[in-house]
Length: 101
Image (cartoon, rainbow, N blue to C red):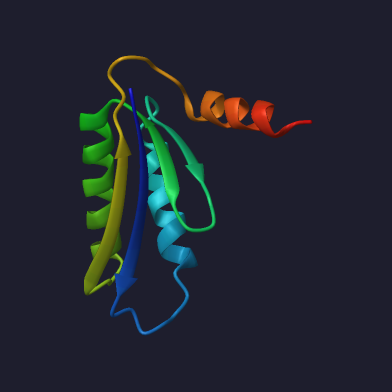
């Protein structure tokens, strides 16, 4: 299982607001029930099978182009741990347990 942070910034839309584009990426992710996604202020974190995550990111790109984005700037960070498996929630719980005092 992989955890991927992705940020897709549409350029050439005529506006500095990207909320409608972010909302569309979330709709794309809803069509992937095997993926768990969490929207954060700057990235969307996606947990699941890496090939399916890549497919979803490609669909997100195509959806934003269909909405009129002339250019996309995308950042992808991948945590693909093969020796053990920890969900997004478990990773946060471990850190929180270390900061409680």
